[in-house]
Length: 478
Image (tube, rainbow, N blue to C red; front, side):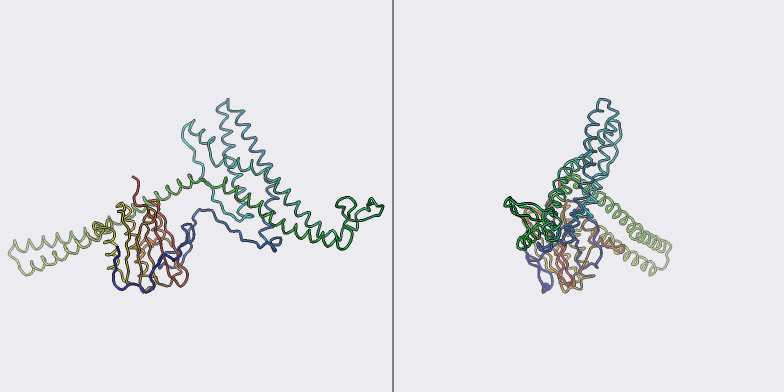
């Protein structure tokens, strides 16, 4: 099912357009550039080092430094973990003493923070901190909250696993590096080695490899130096591999779990939705009080004056003028009430989402093509969100994008609703905070979409085109 308002844009959207991921820095249709707010997601900043230049790459030496620091810290962290478990088990009979064990578990968060900081500085991976501990009320609930602190236990698991891994990783990395440096410089320092007698009675100064085989000739020195170069290249790869093991361990144990991150996201979305709803109610109250109510008060006064004119036998023409003014004010008040009602629930949605999108396209300042291809009927909450998202994005196109047209497509993909709005404007747009003069901007749209577990994805390279994709469930559980 396809609907089209005035001339379609020359640069239509097709399925080949790329769209940025939900977690990446996005851009709103036609909005001026701004910084993307922190998403709280895991961020990798490491760069790929070519095989031949890896021994000289900064990343390699940073991860080698991480292995040194991990070797120094992990024994202390392992001791802390063993003490925490043994002390808590030993003091469990006192019950009250379990608070000490709980505080030790909670203190393990410090180890997690320390290794997250190391990972951020030396492994180039930013892992968000878990949610802060919230003390519960009541003796048993408080005790259970301390002893059951999941981030604390995960940090204890990390330092426990990091101890043997640090020993193995450091030993293997340093061994490869020592062999590499020794092989490449053997030609120089081998002259100071003590002389050794071979089985045939000859004397040699050089490293002995096997029975009676010494590295003390030029061809053998060159071969050993070449072997050292090979081990240097392998050392870099081994070091990066060991660093990556720590990176995986950090990601697995020191960040928030999927469940806790999900809870945080839902709590944040709920708070934003409540704040947005409260702000909207206050705006409606101001509109009614300062606009419609004041206009109706004026109508009542004008009608009262007209009645007094007619009752006292006054000038009928003046009374008629007052009635005309009251009639015009009444029509203006009705228009204002319709606008307020439309901002709460657009009447066009009563005839379906496709018709509502058509009405938006018809009122747009730029030509808009609307294409709807779906068989399922979304829930009313989802329809409202789609409508307001499309209205805000098309308004941004008209205000900022300097576009000749826009294309709106609504379809169903894998049991979910997808709205795409594209313009052929200048691009280079980015999200920003809600605007005081009206409109919520991309930040507000993203918050609105998140309240029903949806996502908003944006692609807006400099020069355009700009494509915004909104993914929503068809219905909201309630």
